[in-house]
Image 1 (cartoon, rainbow, N blue to C red):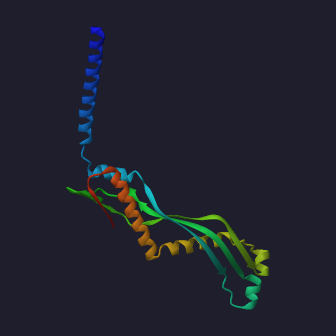
Image 2 (image 1 turned 30 degrees about the horizontal axis):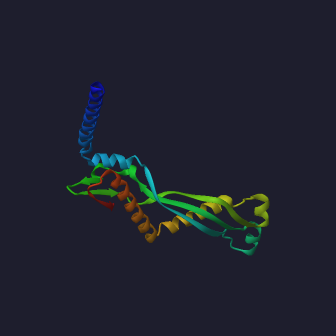
Image 3 (image 1 turned 120 degrees about the horizontal axis):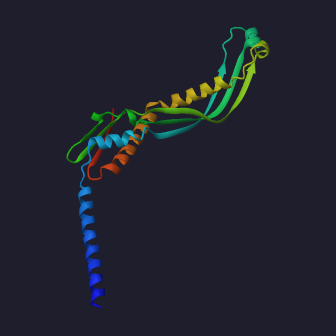
Length: 195
C-alpha cells in the first residue's frame, strides 16, 4: 500500500513540476517585444488589401460622329449598352517602407499609401443594341461589344474616383489596418495615417 501511495505522490510531484516549468517558459516567451519590423513584415505579407467593392449598373450610348445625313445613313454607328461593373479599391501593403511603422512607448503609428483601384471588371453580360449604317454593316461590321465594355468600365472607374468615394475607401482602409495591427500589438494605441 505504501508503494502505491509513494508512486501516486511521485507522479503528482512530476506533473506539478512539469506544469510549473511550462508556465515559466511560456511566461518568458509571452514577454517578447514586438518591433516595427515585425508589424511591417506582417502587413506586407497581405499584399493588396481590398477595402471597398463597388458594384454599379452602368449605361452608355456611343455614337460615331458623322457630318451629314448621308454619312450617318451609310457609315454611322450608334451603340447603346447596359451592364454591371465591379470596381475594387484598396491599399497595396507591399509598398510599405520601414519608416512607415513607428513604435513609441504607448502608441504605434502606421502610415499607409492612399487607396487605389485594384481592378475594374464587367460582371455578367452586356445588354447591347448596335445600329449601323448600311455600308458600315456590309463592309466593316462591328458588334460594338469591346467598345461598349471599355466605356462601361471607364464610366464606373470615373464614378469611383470621385473625392467622396475615395475618402470613404480611405476611412475603411484605416479601420482595416487598425484591426490587422491590433492582432499583433494588443497593449498600445494604434494610429493609421494615409500618405
